[in-house]
Image (cartoon, rainbow, N blue to C red):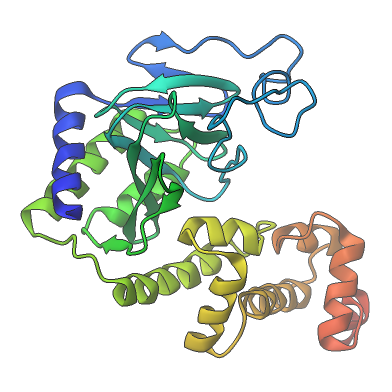
Length: 303
């Protein structure tokens, strides 16, 4: 089943291209999406998000999840069956079957059924050296759900795709080309096998690699759990089972080691705090003292 879905996405990319969505604008070729509302609200809380006082949902109108954005990774989405109501940067719009959308980092998005009709979405998440696949679905008799089994594919171009997605300025053409190569390789080599245990093991390795590369940002467990499409509590539990430490403790160890190295080099403490993912120097000082028994300045003086 996953292999057939990948083939379907690959054919759609080759025949129809893709729609790139980014925080500032959405592109289809050279056409721009409607501009956000003048008041800067992007329509998020004005007319169609449950919880807002002005929103009066009809039965089935509730989104599957609240609008979210991912600062650390890119996603690729396509409706495998059925039309879906998709929220992109403040605008709800009907997305037809077999249309690929590529969501840049920090693109605000959500999904819900279109007029109560069933649908299945295929999601690809770009990680440092792999792509993960899962499905989100809606059926009137069961409601919303995610696929229980996930898939990890490891084409040789995955690392280049990851780096391209993180580069600034973002090169859409290069990313598109690499994505097609990844999918073609996966389909040709029959990489897509639906095994939950393999998925968890591969994703945990990718999460660790992601932390190694991004500890200098204010990374959160919630952000990481979205990359893995797992709940924060469950992710933390299985991460500890595999590596012997929680996500938080591993992240703290990376930041602490780098902070000590920079302090030994005589760097400014405020700059060091920002370099290890702490925008607030006071919070960094508390963190450092908690783990070493010394303030950053005391540690630096003793070097």
